[in-house]
Amino acid sequence: MRFEELRLSEPLLRAVRTAGYRTPTPIQVSAIPHVLVGRDVLGCAQTGTGKTAAFALPILQRLSQHEVRGLPSSSRIRALVLCPTRELAQQIHDSFRTYGQYTSVRQAVVYGGVSQNSQVRAIRAGADVLIATPGRLIDLLGQRLVSLASVRMLVLDEADRMLDMGFLPDIRRILAQVSPQRQTLLFSATMPEEIRKLVTDILHNPALVQVARVSSAAPTVAHWVYHVEPPQKLPLLTRLLSRRPCDRALVFTRTKHGADKLTRHLLRAGLRAAALHGNKSQGARTRALDEFRSARTPVLVATDIAARGLDVEDIAHVFNYDLTSDPETYVHRIGRTGRAGAEGTAVSFCSSQERANLRGIERLLGKALQAATTPTEAVERLRISGAPGQRLRTKSSAMRRVYSPC
Ligand code: AMP
Image (cartoon, helix red, strand yellow):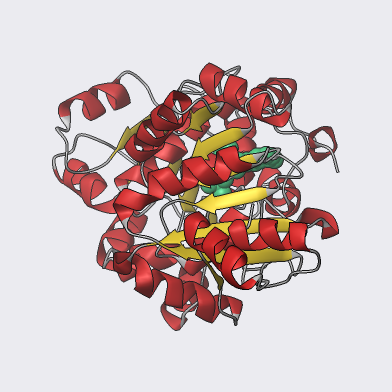
């Protein structure tokens, strides 16, 4: 399926091309047509599936074509997106900006923890789409600094998380101020009873769109773990990456700062590496990705959010420099390797602080990660006993396997 077949307007298709997307993701294929015709949607999908574009693209299209149930286009805040955290709000805001860059639709974002003044100014300057966390929006409504009277499209994103965070009363108060003559889209990774009840209350004959939860990894991926403490991680990674020409390796760090720092160290060690994270400009991200795709820069150090939409085939090695505490994120990370039956290798560095994360990952995978020995110990073992390590066939492959999973 191509984006063109989803009947999106040219300015949106252009934005999608600029973002570097080649084909729509399954949730986009299923949701976009329903949203475009004005139907309510119940989406069972988690972050990382492309769900933001699944609602943002058709909302932008309807707003730019003034199709929203009989409202004059000059009326403001015609679409409201509620989400649980400020990070997500910011991310959704960025997505609307990216996808709407060739339209005249304007957006604003409000969330707590920062001064409200500039947020209110952005709304007053004219926003068609408002992205908000419930608490801050309630504050602004209470001060009569914002009106939801013109809202005709409402999105509840990560509804289960909003409920977990105790936002249900706020959500209900907000809903009371939005016209019942609206289109409602609700996305949730899980469907507990509370969400089902909310769905029955606020959605009308919704189209159900669903993408499967990620819970297993490709069987062709070998999972290795090095038990190393934080100070040993950098020297170990440098050695593993320089030992053999890993064609392309994706290295995950927990933070943007960590990604930058690690990249600087790798560059200093003479490795061709680049960082990919949310603080990089779109131009810098595109460049880093192109160079990684062509293997001119074979090592890409990324944060989870930046790597989510990464569409690069045949990554031989994925390194978990920081071991994620979310097992599904592990599966997402290593989903970049071992694609389409190809062999892939996932290498995790686990410090004593990260043991609990490892257990969670092993539970989800239903198996233990193979413990790898650090390079020097492995060489010693080979020399003394000639003993092969795991999965050995010939001595040279033994050397490679025991020495490092690279
Ligand atoms: P989301 O699930 O909305 O958080 O999106 C996850 C990531 O996927 C984001 O980084 C998007 O930029 C990216 N993305 C969304 N749609 C596509 C697509 N059709 N092709 C490639 N990447 C995409």
